[in-house]
Image (cartoon, rainbow, N blue to C red; front, top):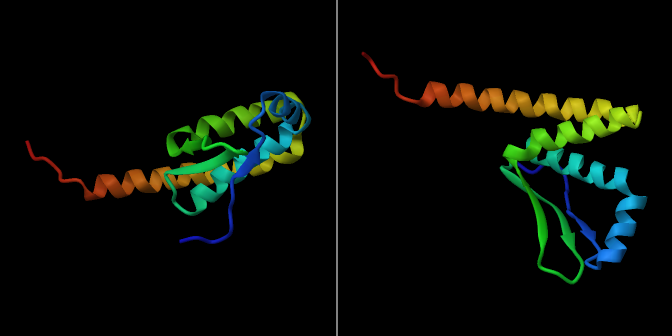
Length: 117
């Protein structure tokens, strides 16, 4: 169920332009990752395209197994640079992800056949 619109962020394919963009917009790029993960969690997606590159077929895709580690890294960065205004959102998305993971584990364990000894 798609609840809102989402699009990946287009980045320059030129290395020099990319390096400059990263230095200037590091927080914006991290927020793109956070927004992507949030959208994927809300819409039960197993992967999401986060970035694409101008004039290129290359894309950056995060799969569900990497959501938590990405959120942890971003949260740690925010804490270490005292960017506290973004921390709550990251923690909220981590909580939603953990709740969905727990629901899926319970659902799988209920649906799997039980063996008798």
